[in-house]
Image 1 (tube, rainbow, N blue to C red):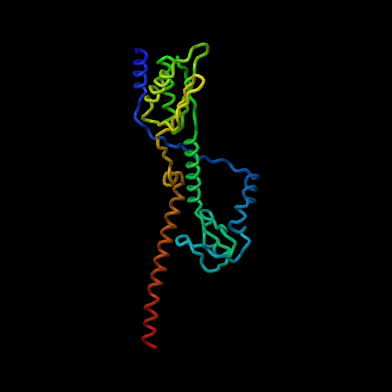
Image 2: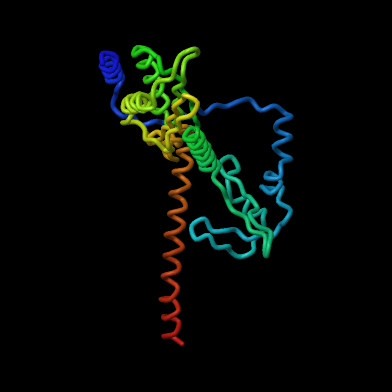
Length: 266
């Protein structure tokens, strides 16, 4: 009974408020060698970009509607963009060659967001195994419990294994169940059992799934990694697009009135 009370006290001493795991993502740069540049230029993706596009007459896909425009000369489209911030890529060859204009900064943000999402998925599926013996003392159990909680806080799954110590008798099955119940209760705020418990060859296995919600940085979080000069250029381009859109709408609305006036005088 005293051992059980000692375990309970040790378990409650490591209980903490339920945290939220955050995927840490580091953004770094590296120098690009001449060999790397050559490999990048010869990649299939870059062969369908910019001047490397073989088709000279193409249709530009509208960024808002997603519909292709009338046939245009590729050179005119390339001349209309700033190649430091944007690029033109061939997205389809049939039934007609279609190209899109991509914002380099936005594509970089999307890439970082996808990478963070993949990292979060891998972290969620990661499994850790924590081993104890039936004769583990309360102080050591508290240490193991803290380790289990640490892994659960990261969003990992934890396989908990209680095994018999060498040259010792296994406890009765009822005692095994009680030990597992006591340990699992110490991390019930962070986990749930996603598989049935296993009892075999004197061992008891518990399979814990973390309840912690892994927060993945969104696109806006990565936007802070962009240089201020790039953000200013993006803002300027958005204003120019908005101005051009309003101008086109004004022209479209003025056409019917001009037609009606001509009908009056004819």
